[in-house]
Length: 239
Ligand code: ADP
Ligand code: 5GP
Image (cartoon, rainbow, N blue to C red; front, side):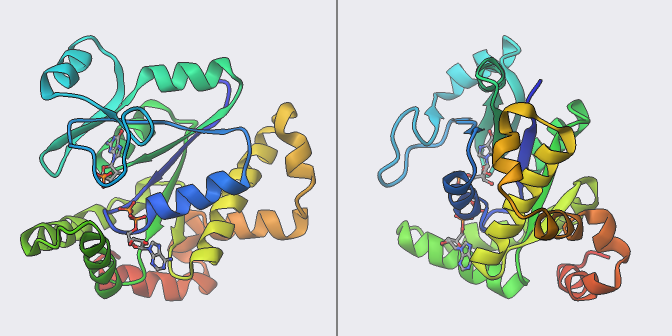
């Protein structure tokens, strides 16, 4: 695709949806891919706004027709990114942002070497657990088994972090949003996208690029300043 494909991914409860909704308010020309899912709408969710809600038969037919860029079975429901979302963003000259689970992200990273993958790191297993509980309580579904299953899965998903280009710690929300924004704008600048240059130029270059660079997983592996983040990863059993 001509625009940039951004993938934001992490274990459930890390804060992807929260971060993405803040990011979209701050960065233009960034389309959000509305996924297909077989799960039922929650709360005030509406058809074709949060998700394209589909039956299992409809979803399986779309798989058979080759209609998905990626799809995965996430906690007993299908979720997938339609190829149409990619075509639509491309035809409008926009970048596309995916908020998808780790299995789906690994498929996209493999297919689109030029995609920009961003892993969201929760501050600790304890904070992840309390965020999962807080969200479930808000949705009236604090089922212990669901929470424990997500926590177990989080530990194995965290181990995939090194396959991503960037990683952003989601501790203080504003700081995490700022880092995410720096990654998007730095990638645009790096690729010299003419139609979005004005927005990139309006950014103070001095702060932007070092901030984005500090989020590279390559820096996370070795830099002195990332020692604290490596300690956080160790609490999830990742080294
Ligand atoms: P995900 O999309 O990764 O499953 P959500 O965005 O739904 O996660 O966030 C899970 C819960 O954590 C929500 O209740 C959200 O309000 C809360 N949350 C997200 N980011 C932060 C943050 N930086 N600080 C405190 N709470 C947060
Ligand atoms: P929720 O049901 O809470 O909206 O989403 C559950 C999980 O499915 C989240 O981790 C979310 O990122 C992921 N997800 C949403 N859309 C897609 C998608 O199109 N593909 C994949 N692989 N995961 C998705």
